[in-house]
Length: 442
Image (cartoon, rainbow, N blue to C red; front, side):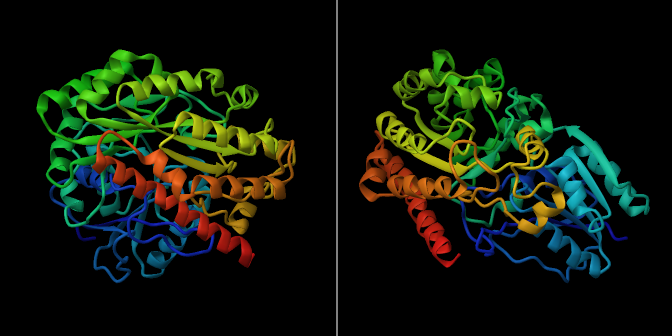
């Protein structure tokens, strides 16, 4: 085998079956730089981010490394099958652990779980060269090396993604991250994060940290923010954090000084019972005050909300709408709960015989496709019918995508930032039209 590899970051399909092409806020641009940075220097590597380019199925590379974030594992399998028909050796980088492994069985020569660092990549590539690939590799979370952002230098993006660490200290029942990491996390050494940000700043001054939770370790986060400020990198950035960061004035001040202007918070539900049922240990009674504290530091708040939990009723949607308006949530991100195999909520609903796809095979037949946003109910809700859940969800989406409401939410102290936030909000309007069009067709 030649020492030539082809690394592919696939796109995913929406519920209408179309592949997502071009920029989308759920693109993951750090995967290719992360893996490319771990490849030994004596390998020739070509890359493909399918959001922006087409996959070359006729490549002369003998080794294919296929990455997948899990939005559409079934589409990743289609890609793998095409390469296998061409006699290529294929390695799949899995992010959904056992479920990914089951789906990809027979379509790939090897699966690796976790993050493959330099040592791990050298090991798996030598095994590939010598024809001794194992079916499964467990690589843990090695992130302490410089990523290679030169691999995306020719792709125009409104922002570039970076990463501080992997995993999350929380262990919420509905969450794919919790399903994989079980409440564990690991932070990168600061020097490598700063190195990445310096690389990125030469390509784009806007950065999105793609960590599941940047507030895993408050001391680490403050140190990183101070390093960013001292290094005078000059970036504006955002990331995902838990709402309890609103109690930490010291960290919020450090965030703002380093260029943080927006935090994405997983509120999920305004029901204390729902949060308790899902092992999310926050009190929704505190949400409003904590949002005010975050905003008082000059940082805006985007919010994730999910619907279909057991305590949800038709009133849930009206309450959520009032909450979004009152708290001035900059970007509301709404989804119907999707019980993903590998999560606690999936197993719970399966035992209760409430799933529309009770096993992995049927999951594949139904093809929920990890659409973002998810507007279909693939389970039987507790206090509301599936039809009512979907109808109320679409009505709420209609409200949040009205032009006057989007304009109000997008206002910030900086006119340029306001325009960027409005463009992000306008994406909700386009999503609503697509969902309504698909609903009418079905």
